[in-house]
Amino acid sequence: MSTGLDFALPTGWLWSPLKFTTTFVNRGTAPDYVDNGFIRAISQAANQLSGLDWTRTRFSAHQGNPRRLKGYLLYGDVLVNSTGNGTLGRVGYFTEGPDDIPCVADGHVTIARADRKVADPRFMYYWLGSAPFYNYIYSALVVGATNQIELNREGLAGAPIALPPLDVQRRIAGFLDAETARIDGLASAQRQAKALILERRAAKAFALVTGADAAEQAPSRLAWASSLPATWRSVKLGHFARMGSGHTPSRSHPEWWEDCTIPWITTGEVSQIRDDRREVLTDTRERISEIGIANSAAELHPKDTVVLCRTASAGYSAVMGKDMATSQDFVTWTCGSDLDPYYLLWCLRAMRADLLGRLAMGSTHKTIYVPDLQALRIPLPPLGEQHEIVAAIRASNAVTDGAVDVIDHQAELLAERRQALITEAVTGGITV
Image (cartoon, rainbow, N blue to C red; front, side, top):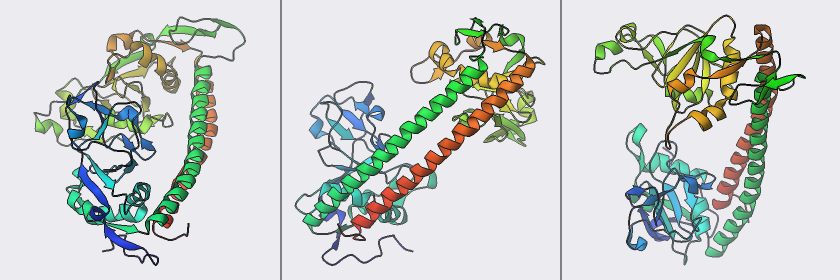
């Protein structure tokens, strides 16, 4: 089986085990974490493809000399994520933190510290992040089960690095610094453009469900919209839709979890609707049984019921595409004849900022409590106008979503170009 490193090097280059080009190869420490401290800990979550994300770092409870901690970081250290399916092998580069607080890597991150007499740290960073080395990691160094893989430290220390003369390493690193910065600048501009498009998408939906273009406006009784068309009503949602909820049948009764055929919406389905593109949920990761419903507070809701997540990933909503049940993390509304479920869906999405900012409680995991949801008010135009609003939102979204798809495709091409350029440079495929 190919390891990804079975290719010839240019004249003057040589293969060397990583441990011969470093002064330190080891994982960091696993500190006791606190909300605030004097030592910043970098985890695999903080080691992102776009660079070190300081908002995802945590703090160590250690009060002594940080240099005594295993994993204390120095300028130019290369960081390799050593655990996690999907994050393993991700490479970062440490220069300094966002403040004067010393930094350490945690136990899920391996530090490779270049011996600067033989290896340039930036070249090492690019080599460890190249496609051939990434393939090598997964073919030769990964141990453990599929859902709990990790990088073998001893194997990483013995892993080969393609090593040109030191002056060539520096030229390659300088070339890649300049070229990847240019590509990253383009990618950043694309992300900003995408964010602006998505803001306009949300603003358009908000304007439509609140009738912002109507000539004659009147003050509203809504907490999330200052005015509505004079011909619309501001109503309590519970008067036009029956509110329901969900439940989880006890798992201490295995027989309640046999012959599960009923789609069961849990927080796992939020990933399907997080970008607000999908309106309808039809497939769920989990299902429950009829006997499970019969022996719990769970209930079977009819097709076209609107569902809103109120815990964890709070504020996200969808319409049921078939008869379904939900966990207790959701509330539901089964609409009466005067309320279109898709119009309600877009009202809930338009008011998400208000739901999270005014009603959601909790610091780590936001929760919207049922009494607050029972008091929700929505704008209510005539039913025919509701249908027109939904159609207008869909037409507007089709345009913006097409633009977003173009940007996403361009971003993929830029990422491929960046990776190909790094691989070509660190393997001698191009002369710098």
